[in-house]
Amino acid sequence: MRDVICELIKSLEAGRPVAYCRLVETRGSTPQKAGALMLVFADGSQAGTLGGGCVEAEVKRRALAVLENGNAEVATFQLDSDYGWDDGLICGGRMGILIEPLRAGAAPEYFQQLSTLVERGGGFTEAIVFDEAASGLMETTSYLFDEHDQLLAALHASLNDLPDAIATGLRPLASRPRPYAAHGVGYLTVQPRCRLVIVGGGHVGHAVGRLAADLEFDIWVVDDRDEFTSEARFPFAERRIAGDIEQVLPELEITRDTYCLIVTRGHHHDQRALYHLVQRGARYVGLIGSRRKIKLIFDDLLDEGISAESLGQVYAPLGIEIGSQTVPEIAVSICAELVSHRNRNGQVPGRPAPVNVAGLGCER
Image 1 (cartoon, helix red, strand yellow):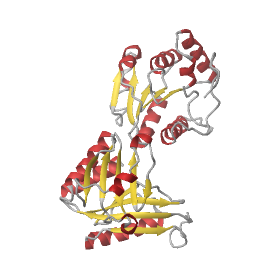
Image 2 (tube, one colour):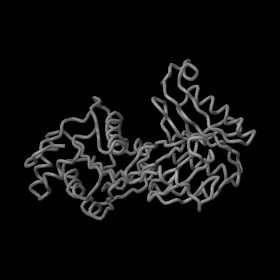
Image 3 (cartoon, helix red, strand yellow):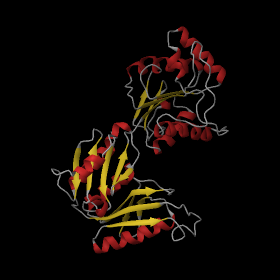
Image 4 (spheres, helix red, strand yellow):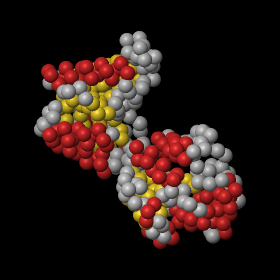
């Protein structure tokens, strides 16, 4: 999303006309879910995707027409034999897509606020009217709410006149709702972006960081070796911290949206990193290693006063079971675990059995 919104802002600032295509409603099985974005330019180029195939091609065709006539359109696609037959993608679901022409100077306040929220990563909700009959409101009207559910901007409407229908349908972002539709209004929720602290900039840490950055985690990397936290090695990282983990980790900011991944080069470094992170309130703490190594580390940390309950919440061994052997495969299994944990409120299918923690009555 960040790349698409950045491209949108650049286009508006440069005076380049663009059709802003937002997937506002889905029902049943669809190649993309509500919230997907695509930009279509007058030369036929695009940024983002709505899932590919015949639907995307038809949206592009309609977007080019919208750029010509200047009239927004809500396009509905039933994914049956009309769309997807040639590609073998008869999903059976339905997609509602708002296609809106934008030109230089188009609602700069709304899109600047949207860009700020995306870059800040705190989360937000867009409420978009796509069905005038069902909502009683003008189609294409949009309302932008921040992570605290405060109205920041409105598109094609007054900021001082929030309809009761919009306010009533708004679900608190703190309850982590997925995108949804109600009475002709699509509520496109974007959850706060999670920070991923990778302790260890070696092969696995590098591979995980590169993939996780594409999955919209904010990457922080920590290592005691300068060359393993360099900008050349981690150009995608938000922060690169070189220093002794005994000094760095106790001072490192850990929030409730922080994921911690311990993949250092050795048993001792892993143990010290876990000691400093396991009881800091992170949403997720994961530790790489064999079951024997993990058991030894857990036993040692119990002796140091770390609670069995805290150790029982550590994800170790790391990654879901996909038979991974190579570094890229290991990175895929770890990132799949991270995404599932983030998107499914801590549920991670396909995990190996947890390592027993002495003194813990029940296991995660």
